[in-house]
Amino acid sequence: MTYLEHHGSHYDARIGYATSSAYRTVLEQAAKKVPSLQVLPVKPKTRRLTEFFRRENIAELVERISAILDSEE
Image (cartoon, rainbow, N blue to C red; front, top):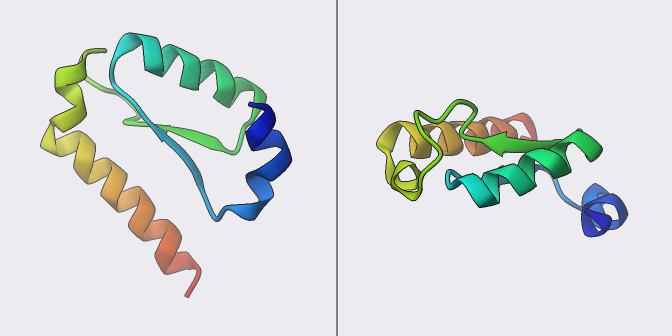
């Protein structure tokens, strides 16, 4: 979090992509302190590693990144 607080302004987006429970919990806690951090997928079906590769979740990540890049043009 300290990294995000100090260097976050150098990035166009701050996105954390995690589906496993342990990693997701940490990202969600960080997002509470750094509101600009987006945790994706927004609503995974389960909090397991297998969700990491689910097409719907990857599509959500790609769509979010595309929207950010498109808004900068």
